[in-house]
Amino acid sequence: MKNLFSIILIAAIFVTCGEDGEKIIPTEIPALPVESTFSMDFSITDANSGGRTGAKEVGNWARSTVIVTVWSALAGIYTAIPVASFKEAFNHEPTFDASIRGWVWEYDFTLQASYHARLESEITASGVNWKMYISQEDSFQDFNWYSGFSDISGTSGTWTLNTNPQDPKPALEIIWNRNEDGTTKDLTYTNVIPDDVNNGGFIKYETSSETDYNRYYEIFQKKEDNTITIEWHKENHNGRVKDPAHYQDQNFHCWDESLTDKEC
Image 1 (cartoon, rainbow, N blue to C red):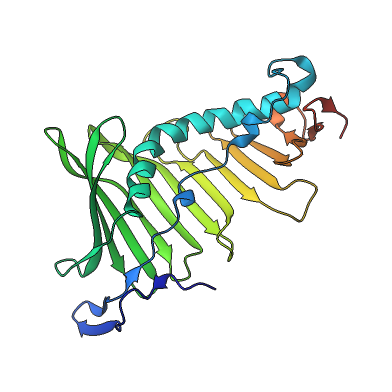
Image 2: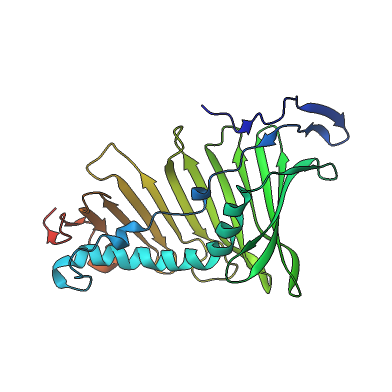
């Protein structure tokens, strides 16, 4: 397993003790989690052949894409700036900041407007805590747009994304797990907007090679108290959906490689 800490500098990790207990002073630069820890695969919505999205004969696939598209749109709202800011970090070398005893990536990036980013890392015995502060000239300064954690192996972690500087509250929680080869194992988005009627709703995406379908979504609609299961094959495009509220049953409803409804 690839260790999370890339040995960029030849040095040790020093440990000091005090009232706060064991504290790690890092001299190795922690590896950044990959960009895909933010980004879910919504490509089931791109599988259409022949432009028959609304046709009755592709109703099961179309129902699946409607549900996934809702989450794709929501994720796009809250992940756009976090993804753009984090992606740019890979183009820069960090510096050590003794005041926080951690490595800091600091740089400018552009997404329709210009921003300044400061990504801070805090190494602990179990992994790395991450905090991203974003500023915009003549607008806002050092807004903690998102925070996260990646474990010592670099194969699991979390992100919590806030809304925006004008409405600074939590919006989206991401839990991610990766395989040892670096590919995505699973990714979950959860609505954590305070007082929102869909707070607690989530979509989980998972890859698998152990069934007839190699992609999986589990979607919990909080307001409707409805759990939807979608299984599909990314390359072949066939799949099935279970949606009790929509179909009024607990059965799977299938479609074939041409997206046409079929008996399961």
